[in-house]
Image (cartoon, rainbow, N blue to C red; front, side, top):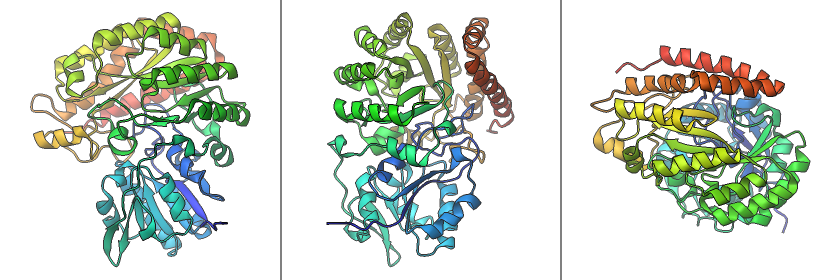
Length: 479
């Protein structure tokens, strides 16, 4: 039977310059250098809705006045939101509704999935919000089904918020269509850049969920779940062969699964398929992958691993249930360097157990293992995470906002022995102590001299980075 779909717009709303608004990334704030992730969470349902359109406003530089006229062209608009961007995204929804009162508007994303009633009560412009895994929920809404007949959403009925039955979690991930044709149709890959990835790049998911139990990590506790549900090796290989044809200009593909190395045999099998294609690729990994697997990945095109080290203190790792020992992380890092695998290491300051001394331990650890690049962020108590509950239970929450008006991450957690101002200022300290070492500066300089294109990018990024550090010092919160 032929289904007449609603004219559907998938919108990643306008936001502060450089702030990705919580698209595919787990770091929902403006970065040190201009960076944009792909809106994969919107592209996935867009691939299920014939005739739909995906607009990713932030990387395209679109403001509210640019997207407002689209309201008149569609019957349904689905916006992806996040906890930091929610107030601004609601304002966008209200502007669209004012432009076209008949436009059905829904929101998706972790922020609304865990607070459906509060989200709907935030504005009458929102007609519904979807639960955690919303791909087929949105498809059914776009098919014109009555909202009360669609599982996995909450909607307003005569001023009351009603909840439909929960949608079962998706087990057969191969049921999801490819996202890369949507990227090709609606996005400009040259508008997406991440400092540690080659340019231009494309990112997508090969699975959802993560086996780790990290107390601070948003996605496994809200959307993906703490099992790793994966697409088959053949399904991934087929899309990558297509992506290679669709984007001949792309120099690197990134698989944004929370922890691609959760399933080592599968990781090796996918690597061998990518090796046949001659693709350069990178993934998220835990700092415990054995040498034998690392070698298979490297031999088949792996260039870089994004690794969440988080801290240089073992007790903090235990407190956040990271499931990694520092000695194992050190061995893993040595193995990567021996094989020529680059590492982008991420660290989080202000986690439970943080002190002035542990911050110094993290600095020493980062300099010791010396990944190619690092990212330093602040502990963010996202609603429905274990960290959020722990912080509220212990009275550590000292600010409700997770980002400031410009989209820069703020310090929300403080301790009796360590103020949130000091935690915030320590971001600047870690960056300076890591990057302004003679050894690191020589290494980065030599890398630039070998690649003129990289040199141009690094010089531009360096200006952004120094500007970030200056602004960071000027905007420290007052305790």
